[in-house]
Length: 370
Image 1 (cartoon, rainbow, N blue to C red):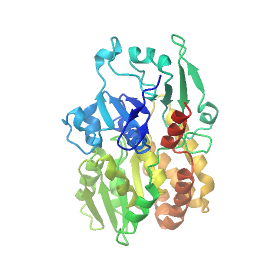
Image 2: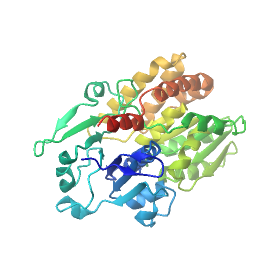
Image 3: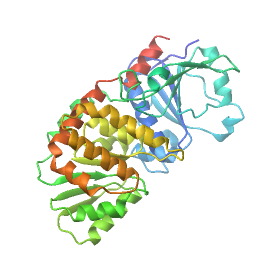
Image 4: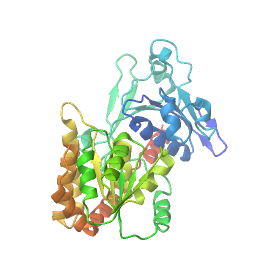
């Protein structure tokens, strides 16, 4: 049985994306971006999410926006994930494809009806550059209670992984934006991190820099602290722009306009990689230290894209130390002194990542083979 529906654009399959918000804006950000891109692929999409206030902010709306008003597209609907669905009936009809975000566990009633609808069920896992995902990507697991098959999908940066979500027209939009950015001799830095970052030490480093710096601070706590600390240093070489909350649609431009972007979390890291801009990724820390393995796996894959190995080594060391709560001034000086070489390597890395799989296109192919 199919639940195809007719939209204004085309005869589309229906897709349900389930999301529980755990990691700040990250979970909602990844799946909202995917939902929007699946709609552009021509499908009718429902995003079922337990934290609609967070999603509203990402969509550029007020936190208190009613759930039915979060999306401006009638064929991209947002639905609040009710707690009662955990142990009771779920009123949603099962879609042609179900995307389970980060093993969030579907409502049992909905899950029990999947096999009868011949639904393509995909679990989108967290991003990693580790080699092991290449053997696990697209493997199926079978739910013992119903016999339903779930496909395990692993986003990554190798050609054997699931890739990233890349919007249609991404490169054209980036090139058009960059053509409008005025030239400047200042080092342009965008800052977005967790509160555990070594903000005070970074502020001292920037304030003591001999070059002019244009510092753009996000609305996060750490960025506000950084701005205050730099201002208190009474330095004349750093100009500061403090931003309010930036919706998802405007985030790419902040990275595109930067020489170096400090970013945190999965969605921001993906956008920095696609942009081909030098970044410092503060990876979400895990108690068992697994984040160090993920960070090393990414840098190992990036190394071959850099012709100037000393500047790559300096960047790798600075990023490692930053995640350890320290600022490596020597590594920073090496990075900024050889910024052109650093940018060249990141440009090649961005081209590589953009040439890999596109999650929305892959899911589109999967559902149409159903």
